[in-house]
Image (tube, rainbow, N blue to C red; front, top):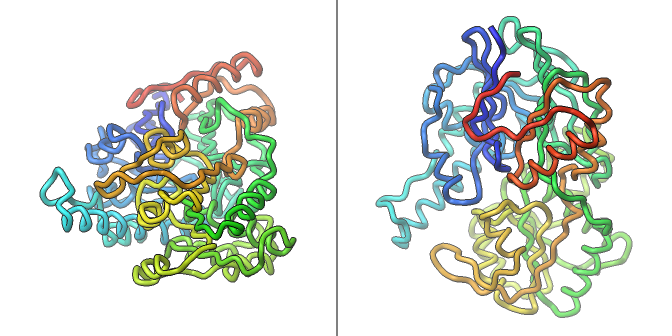
Length: 454
């Protein structure tokens, strides 16, 4: 029987990555992500999968970001009982991210109910912290470059992908086929993470296309951030920095630390990391030395370069402080979490600043701010954007189009086919064209819920 792949997410969109591989009646789900962004996409999270979770035999994760792992609590709650295979770094990060995601959803639902802002009565969380904690019991961690069998006759090997702690490319060997999943590829010049390892030979490649239609600007992240923070400090404003708790938060913390050491920004400029998840994640860099560029001393400095804000009361107390100060808070695309309260409080004042530090998916508040919209809706209220908006595109943890093609070129021989996934339709199709024209490989952009040969 042929090996087949069904694209249950991450097809013609940059969120919700889920790829179901089927062979001889067995099913393996690679990645299990949440949909984010536009409401029609988010509504998919509430719809049942076309395959019952109890009929899935194994799950393999490329990395811990919620658009790749955030559906796991639902999958387990709805009947999946098998193992969840990942690297140790991904397991450790999911132990932080998934319960936090459930907690945030419970908080957001409670806020909507308290203020009667929901169209549904009552508003319900997609899943709870308890659901998330329950699914963590099914994780099994594996080392990079050490093959394992998630199912009899199926073989998986993780290789470093850069991007974030634990992130892996996945080589799946089944039914005589070698299928390579890129996951999210990191950059060769990332400030913190090591570059992705060269790809092994494969018959079929699934390549991400987050930045498939663009190149990172030549700007130097440290220089651009330093100039922005100098302006902020001079006018005594507050910078709100939406960050992903995993990866982006630590990159910005490290950059600010370097700028202070170099004397570019005042050493006394207060910096707050207002995300319990990001605070916990920052400590993991000391545990996983060797997976990133930081020395043990630099990894320790991450945790001491900012005031770590844990409780809700501590977060609220920031509102009583005066600038200048920098507040890093999740989520990175301003889709939820504490950063929304800071944006609601500070975004209207021209002395303040909103610093966007990477890709903003279409339909998110971050994308609307990046596009220059003058008002955004937060918790049922319109908030005027009067603050200076600074975009640090060069802080992205994703490989751009040129870097992605350079990674593919390192494959020993051309694969039989390439599926371009995990990108908006324009970015995915642009990368498809470049793969076909520049590499002379056969490439296609799969549609959501479609099935193709592996």
